[in-house]
Image (cartoon, rainbow, N blue to C red):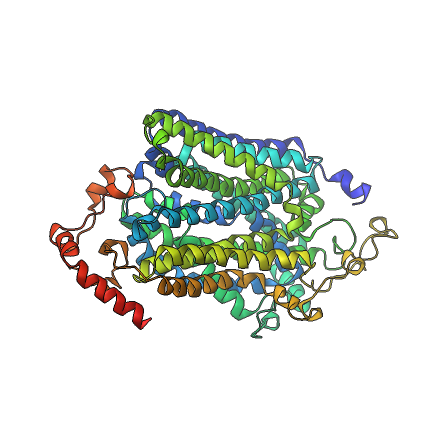
Length: 616
């Protein structure tokens, strides 16, 4: 970056004030709920005493997954690749499936950890803990990228070193989450959603005015293949980075895996005051996602229209395409005091919401799936248990900060986050699909499926990184750059200096590593599902073990040899008056007639289970 450009890329006092107020408000919300719930048990800390409503929770569900990664990565995607990425919104057709199929099923379980369901379903602690461990790994890897993204942005526009930004954002999120619990997370998420939306709209409006109107922005984008019907890639290929088919399918599968088998989403469903609010929180995802994704892609087009003749990356003014938005804010909008501060507050809001949700969920599964099972921890007072859970949350925040220092080697922030998240989410989704909809599957099949599916997916992603697989950028220009911005080294683009590795350059079997990152979740899900079914059949299916009807979906209960229509579920009143208990004391009940039928028909169950296995 030239000294002239760097000299004007500084925060004004008002910028620092705007940014600091956002951080302070987040901390105050956390401290407020910490004081209110300081004597409460884990039920309050982890699921907000099951009293939250749809609007703050829906905002929390969105900003948990639309983070600083998306704020930086999506405009950069539009700038250097096109707005074809918006085809992923087709996946929102899966929202009714989440709302009407999965949410009611999970809501009635009345548990804190989603992984506890696997133990209940298979009577296997191993299945529960494998899922728990994979979730923790998934969140840690994702958080590393989430923390690194705003730190990179802040370093690009201020004199803040990256290491200080990483430590700051990780520490603040961990502290208010550890002290305030689920209510603090949800309400700070709602606050950060508004800051995030305000920051994006502010940058977009100011940018459109400077360029000369949205019509000019669109014309330039169409002329340079950033927008328009010609950008749509209808090719059917698993090696193309983005195609219409690949993005649409990946959007659907990724949405389902994110909101059907994630502890982060599950805790929010469990925290709702009733099922109606849970439904609404899911349906509100549609307008929120569409609004934010369109706004961020339009911001990318504004950036391209601004730098159409002088690309900062090609000119050597920035080191990564993910720095294009923060560079633009400081280069073109910093003349208006407060704009830069609002933008960085927007970035940090996205990061804080994702980190806080992840830390809270990791603390939940660590306590519920691991520590609460031990005699020592289960004998502690409720206050001590809550205190230990808060310490666990702080610990996970520290680990995420440490991992953030190596996140820069994982590739573009948007691609890295999507790939790592869904490489693990795909196999986890397969495990829950088997448990909920396939009564013949067993714990062995579930465990093997999750492990092998995850190893394969992550192996493909890190393999593509190791061979230097790099997405091809659309052409840019530096013909209009002022001569003061250019020198002998910056007139040659970074892409020219280090040629990108393309899928077409590779031979088999190495070419397999060039699988589109959008399909890693599909790969993991498909492989895990097939392996899980095969292993279950080879190991005797359910082995004649009685399966309680409420532990499989109502669509497949008729396949259970002992299913009775008199089966009952936990009433709403019972649900809210009870707390999370171990498997043997789960509040979901089966009628006495159904229970006796389960016992008296064991012989019949063994016989019919064998018939099911034979058919499969």
